Length: 300
Length: 235
Image 1: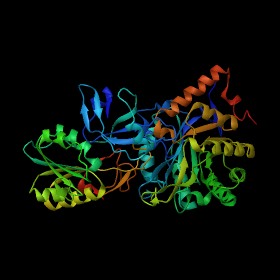
Image 2 (image 1 turned 180 degrees about the vertical axis):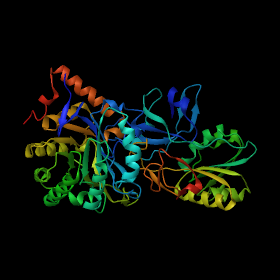
Image 3 (image 1 turned 90 degrees about the horizontal axis):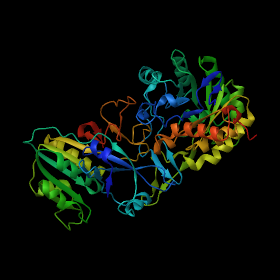
């Protein structure tokens, strides 16, 4: 049985990876998950300098999901490169570093710095809804998506994944813009901008007022967008958004995702990623699927 | 509620917490609840919680023998070392009272409990086995009318070290009081959490020192805490 998939010429042992921001740099989940079992670990976003993030409360639970407005707290590339990359290199898994920035120059600084590091892919976060500058500002205008993709590709030593926002009118257009800019892969969805109000306190549940919604409740929206993106571009798509089980992951793969990311599920089931790897293999066995690539986009 | 969980009980320390999961899949996130008592021999843990929403309301309907999914023990817990001759305040406010009970059991020194309630008392008798208990109530229905600092003053109590858990305004007052008196002071904090294991960076507090994770000034309450030296955190 073959569970290997290939993204931009790089082979992953299976299509299951973590979603940025939900798994730290892997160390926090080391006692729950054998990282060797994952196709890839996608790290928490890293910027050129440390970012303190937003005030608390930063999370709120909503029906079937959650809102977060962490604000991309991160230690900056220097600490990250010295601590987190060596940690991940101990494992037999692909390393995907999520890169965030306030300006194009910020992104490029991190991208250039990572050129010297033993990482497999760069995932460019142009879709965080929780920071005032950068993030989603790059991801809601197709011209901006294309421009930053092109700028990043000109400097990147590794294959580039552009992480797209669902907070747009036409996801196909954004996926095509990334492809036109030279992206090797697109990943989606980032979180959906949402809000919760505490009626007893008559105030917002999050200090940031709005936050990104994730969790099982967003899965149908995410699946639809992954399908649309996969239909719109020739480059591979990484699908995510509410994936909590192997069945969820298989839906995304059949919709056209070459790989899938598990995000919020890690928070309430630290074993989710490995359970999904096992569940996909069980499905393949049961349905006599010799090669997982047979399933990619099979519903089209 | 008592939870039979031998492995968790075996490793648990006062001041640590558990993540309790509800059965309703629409409520994804675990509820972080402090450990009130640990019985290592019997392999069980006690949690005392307030029904604050649908999740804790579900827990309150459980019957003896019902299963509950728990992750833990989480967090650092209170430091227990120190001179047995010293005098300690164990200060709890509202739902911050329960974790002080296991601390009272394990701390080896002269213990004085100061418990602050809104109105209705709970756990007070159980603390009396470990030392004198002073009570403050907001409505004055028992003990000192006012807060825990008012109760310390009214009873003329003194100590060398303070351990406290409770709402932020109380912790702020305890910190100011302890620093003024030059006392060692340990505070247990609370914040909205998602993962409980230090990955999501939701439950941060402002710290004086640069934190080990992000090298900013944001310690993670779930992982670096929930117990901090008072001078270490900005409240």
